Image (cartoon, rainbow, N blue to C red; front, side, top):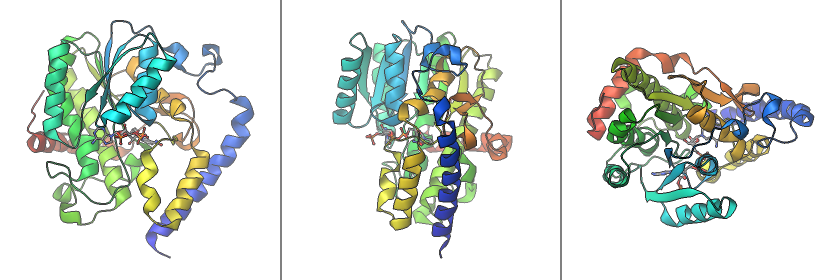
Length: 344
Ligand SMILES: NC(=O)c1ccc[n+]([C@@H]2O[C@H](COP(=O)([O-])OP(=O)(O)OC[C@H]3O[C@@H](n4cnc5c(N)ncnc54)[C@H](OP(=O)(O)O)[C@@H]3O)[C@@H](O)[C@H]2O)c1
């Protein structure tokens, strides 16, 4: 039996445990997102009116990003759907408008796999807006074979971390001059199986590459970036904060690439599919991180159920590796060098 198969079986067994627990809890949780605020769980009912706020959500055409963008728009925010595929973005936009006719949303093109696209997005955004209340760095991909972005970065690291690092830097001036602004980075419980090998950060030529290893590294990078950003914001006395979130195990398009990767991966995905919560539930930690007044810089919000796989959003803890301040600073310096955007 190979290591991948053993890993898959372990995850399935862990998943079955979660599933058993979830079934036992179901009678208490019959309505997920629509539960009333009096239940004690944080739901969209706790979101304040966002009229006049400007919020950018990357990867807003699908999954967590779509659900989050919809709720921001429902609360009156000017919501910018920053997406790479205009057809998908149009379809998502139409869906939001159908459900929320008063929605004030717009689409802007952003491909995080291209630094030139990131620059174009930031420039276009600045011609329209002179402030930014919340930047939600949500877009991501996982489980793809080794490949590189337009700029030669390993794709998962390039899109999930470096593209967002550059985007944040290019928009930081607006964030700094907007009262109580926030940057929300969407990480994952998968950060726990990532490691920062700074000698081979991007699996040069595919060396040592594994789909889950690269994903875990990119998601660990999201947290290292969040904590270092918060530290630098504090150092300059900024009013803006940096926060992280993760959506537990949610039913989205994220795993779509893994399906080609053998029968055990298909079994894993179908088991995880049975366990997964809705994307709307998975978006709650992001929404809470973006708007709840209790949130503080450097906080990390995730699903509050067993193994943080599902449930209402609560403050959670990331692993020790994400709090390694040497790695936080080192990743920041390397990211600046790679994307050639320097800030703070
Ligand atoms: N679902 C989960 O259980 C789970 C668990 C932990 C963490 N997360 C995190 O949640 C975030 C959202 O993922 P999801 O689950 O909602 O998956 P999803 O449904 O696949 O959505 C991902 C979004 O990212 C966009 N994207 C991918 N590459 C991009 C690029 N180069 N430039 C711009 N946008 C790009 C996708 O656009 P296209 O539609 O054009 O591909 C899509 O809009 C990710 O950061 C992911 O790591 C998800």
